[in-house]
Figure 1 (tube, rainbow, N blue to C red):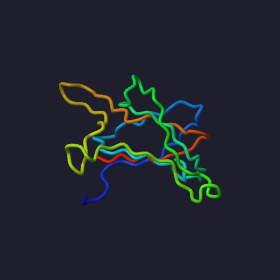
Figure 2 (cartoon, rainbow, N blue to C red):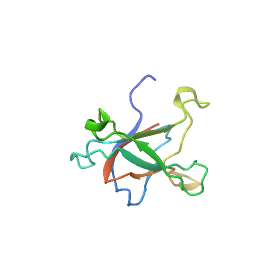
Figure 3 (tube, rainbow, N blue to C red):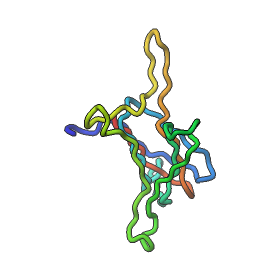
Figure 4 (cartoon, rainbow, N blue to C red):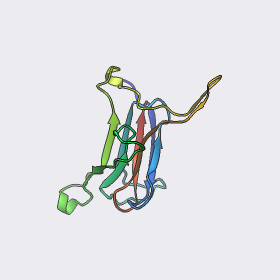
Length: 140
């Protein structure tokens, strides 16, 4: 796809697996969501990779984000051979919109005569072990 990156990217600190899930909200007309464990925290400090992200998605067939999925990486170079951050991606590049894919959700907006609409919850995430940080990238 020609051109540069069109979207947002940020680092979010996640609670341990005993903590609450954090909702990831759309910041615009999102066509692709990428979540990957980050080697740095949101404050720029070093982050030890856990190798496991737990996440819930809205269209999993359950009511109210109940099914928990796991993205698994390798956080131990000695036993795994290499360090691979846990990561997952949500997109529909094979949809009716060609290489752009279908829109997964929209950011909050206000239309005159219609009022405010809340941002779409794209997924809910937390660490699968100790607290960690992830890079969240939304492509428009």
